[in-house]
Image (cartoon, rainbow, N blue to C red; front, side, top):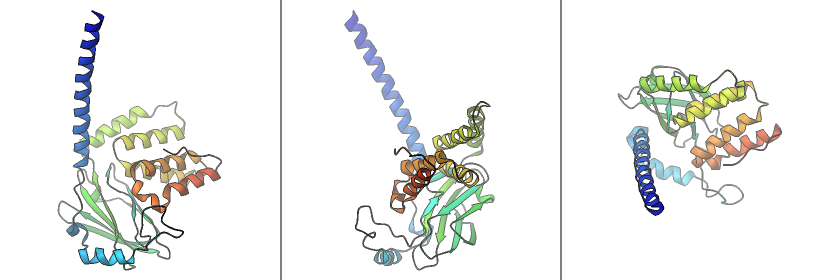
Length: 255
């Protein structure tokens, strides 16, 4: 009798696990379809430009080749980067090649090819405009005007229904007994769960600007980069953030 019950239990458990795995795979598939692969025509580059840029790439980082090659003459997009976006504010931030301080940022809406463009100094800007309307898909490029290819990535804006759901979850997640830091990190976690990484990163950069002495902010931002954007590792973004946390007296856990 005991053996029979055990067999029945294992059979039910296996069926439940297969059902759950199927649901998770389906959900992952939906998320992966959110970003079609960038084509050459999407970013106005050509095979000839790729070949020329490859020749410009240095053979190794200074001191050898302990990590993948990276062309530090390109203003690599840091955020938004293969992410969904919620709300009417978008932080655009990029890696700043040495000696370059002038950049042209271009947003191109995939649905109709409409373009927004602005030339700025520094390595970031905040966009608030019609390209953040629900269910919009946008390609972002940053040109350093140094003869190298632009940094590029893309994002999509959540539907209005999804944004309403996210706002509802956000209201439920933030309780009155949380400290301001706990409330902020709770929002960061929620955005991450929704794959709205641009929103998580924006919140953390805003918090660092107002509370630069708080080491948890640097650690959480480093963890986001380590988890989701490992291709940016050669730019030392996470290492720099952990060093800043260390200066505030805290050692970050490395995921």
